[in-house]
Amino acid sequence: MMTDENTPFSDPRHAPLDFLSHLYAVAVRRAMPLHTIGAFLPSPSGRTVVVGAGKAAGAMAHAVEALWPQDAPLSGLVVTRYGHTPQRPAGIPARIEIVEAAHPVPDAAGLAAAERMMELPRNLTADDLVLCLISGGGSSLLTLPADGLTLADKQRINQALLDSGASIGEMNCVRKHLSRIKGGRLAAACAPARVLTLLISDVPGDDASVIASGPTVPDASTCADALAILKRYNIAVPEQVLEHLRTGELETRKPADPVFANSQVHLIATPQQSLEAAAQAARDAGIAAYILSDEIEGESREVGKVHAALARAVAQKGQPFQKPCVILSGGETTVTIRPRAPGAPRGRGGRAGEFCMGLAQAQQGQAGVYALAADTDGIDGVEDNAGAFVTPDTLALSTQKGIKLSDHLDRNDAYGFFEALNALFVTGPTHTNVNDFRAILVL
Image (tube, rainbow, N blue to C red):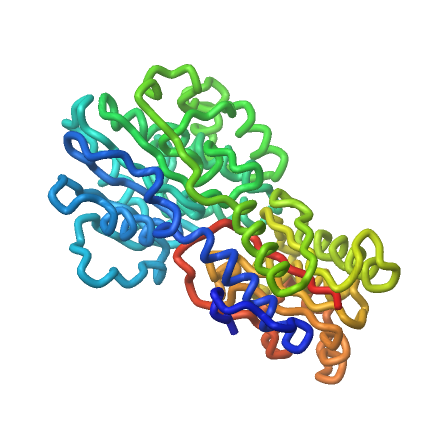
């Protein structure tokens, strides 16, 4: 249901869902690596080895291959999510290997990629360069368990964190301290070579140490922080590992570490930039646009309810904005998985769909309000949709079909709810990732 992002809308009122799809497409295009990475690439000098991980890693690797001088040495390895390797541009020779692994729970393919990545920089000199291409999703894709942990342990811990409702910062704090590659440890393996890290941000605040758990950047969080998070969410880890956390043996690389003396970090795409591009596209179509924030966190359904209250105030009272307008926001909300009865199926869906259920419930069929929430990587959770639409008819249509929104909320089943209403937003992988995108059109 996506539209051509280069085609402006003459009157969004006649096709509100197409208009929202258009804003999403504009936001995604702003974050595409080929459009952003060139300004940050250095002139070749010595050998250049590329490493990287994330949902955008394949597209970032292709962009480097297209822009790097063909007569300059270039090799390396990046890992992306299954099904997220884009088609290689015509006429561009393959010089960077792209492998695929599991997300959001790591697998053996990600483990093998991480092991190889730690070996690639060996024997480099201070005249050589390691170009690190990092985007959201890298925490799961690049897994190398700390001593005392198995891959099965990491899979269980990762799933427990995902189900707990922990924020991305909290999850990645734990992941960094239970890893042999995250938290600056990959940078240590690259010494004495220069390290240039190029980031596409998918985290609130654009903290480089949180994006993909910061394999090549310093980390200010501590083992004590990780222990507190594990305790807060009742996440079980082996006693031997708990002891290593207590003694600080699993501490990450800190900002003062000399391993970062020859290191640079650049953000090449951020959620705010994509929201600003979408806002400008709305204004070009004659619709006022307001960006609430690119850092919104919290329980997805509750964030949806707050957005609904704002949209109703605009629709009914003209406050705090005059209609017609579009309200934009980003960030990374969370979903706490509700307990299930024994044998009951697990709900399907992600945080965008859960947001939409909360929005629809609180919006109460408000006339003139249309919404889209979607993940900019094109996948909401582990399903095949990017997100979902909410319209003034969402609740009425569900009632006609005998579908109870509250039941779907109780079992975290956004996919089932919106699939039954033919309201899923499906794009396929976009090959970038600047996190949640939400747009509410009030006519």
